[in-house]
Image (cartoon, rainbow, N blue to C red; front, top):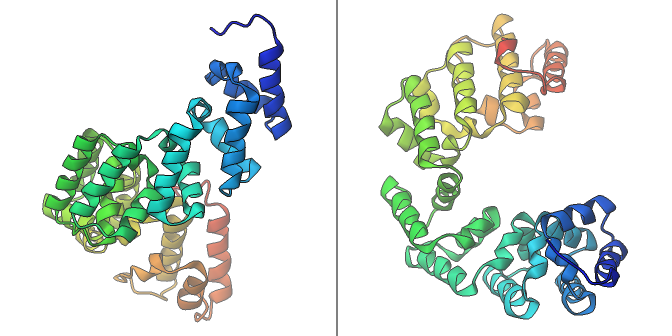
Length: 320
């Protein structure tokens, strides 16, 4: 509970937020989550932070978004915490623009101890991860910089033992995937793949080839396997050897195109034994040109496909 002798201080703080462009709901939410912000000194602790962020290229909208999502940043010392953290990231990533992206994704990174961030980077460098891939990792998963150092070292060792090479981008992709789930969730996903006849070795090989193979939820994995194996008749081993399809949205990509493939088969335009990753991997404009436009029935096929895309939000495996 925050107590005030007079309403002057909280009123002046609220006025700063209002004048800067915060909406009423944003201000209420900010104060609810961090009441102590009302004790701030507008001219010495609030406005200098707003000015610092804007001097680095943040728009006022960006500043509002960062503070609304993580109001604790207002409680950090500008000189002793925010500036050193920003400078470290700027030196590491070599771009204010990229630093802005990183902070927008994870404002908590501004509370990272610079020495701890340096140790995280040292671990990556000592294990042979190139600078460009370190930057990629931080951009994709900024929270990596606030990792427990010992746990992070164990993760690096685990990824290496799985067969990932530190010089490859898949190495950092594997880190992001493994950090996104608990051990029990990982086991749950393994169990799903095993149910579809894949061995531990096949699953791991697919993961090393394409880490996003383990990114989807267990439920989405099961639905994808059901689509390819039961609905299209593809072998699970083929999918493990060619795991890139696993990264696409079921509703927006896989199911609409699977329905088109079934349509083509039903019309005798494609053999039932047809197997092609390109059918699912090809970008939208090229997909239509390669797989639809050359058929005499292209107008009918395209109409069918567009109908499925337009109803993608309600399309599911029961559509088959």
